[in-house]
Image (cartoon, rainbow, N blue to C red; front, side):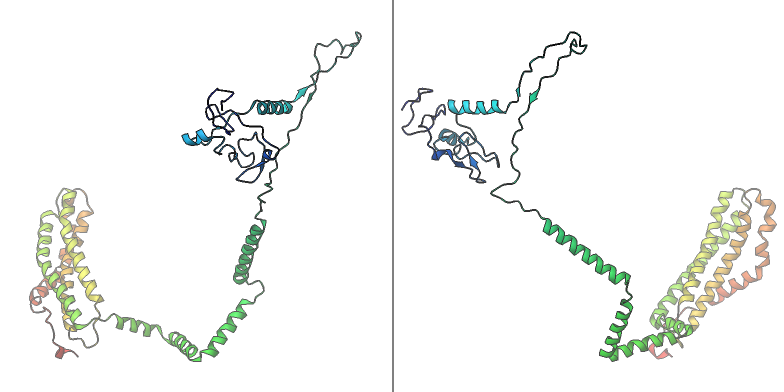
Length: 374
């Protein structure tokens, strides 16, 4: 068989030429005019290449008869050539959709009418044919609007919000009675637990502040082993103060009337730091709570006294430094005022120094055995 369009050899019985894709078969019968889309089921006409509803290619495009060469080459989206009759039919349909302009015959003009002599010509009347819009609904797939789900969700949310508001705001005044009834039922069902809870509340209410304070102190009491460790640590710390008090005294003698204010400030730091350290030891010993009859009660008093003596010696130097640092310049003219604390508290300083030197060695805490406990 020879293709009448490209004169190439075509197999017998083929509908389209595999070379030029022209239609070489017989005219389609009336039954072949009804083609349906394989995607949505819509009815197609032979000239349709894609479904006007879902856009799927028409069955004839993907058939082996009409696009065998395209399928072999991997091109399944190419279109076969239309016949001349099909082209003329589609052209006629396009021309039918174009608006037609009808000419308007000019009426005879009156020479005495000023409007008739106007050069403005009337606009031609255009007849517009409305194009039929496709239906939005798919006759094969009914669209279901989710109104029922939306209404159900809104009702559920409103119900939850109403319940929460009713419980929290209690507009009818029912919740206090409900709580009291619930507590009454619980007390009747578990009388022992209710009695214990009531007794606990009464005991807490009857306790006096003094008793609560006493119980708090008992909970903070330390054992004998812990007391010994704290006392030894504080005692050894106080022993290091002997070298620091010597340094503080040397710095005081060197710079209490020094002309440079910055240098005097540096010299005064050793005295202030020693006093702060001694105060920290005293505070730690004051917080140490020993049980009644503890064998370390006397050791606690001795170590505390050693710390107080060292604090006194440093405090006298700090008081003198306060006066010296209050004068930024020409402090030598205020030397008598600076030395006044040392003169006024000389006996106190001597007593603190002598007491520390005489008792430091003999007041070292000694670990007590279990037999020494009260």
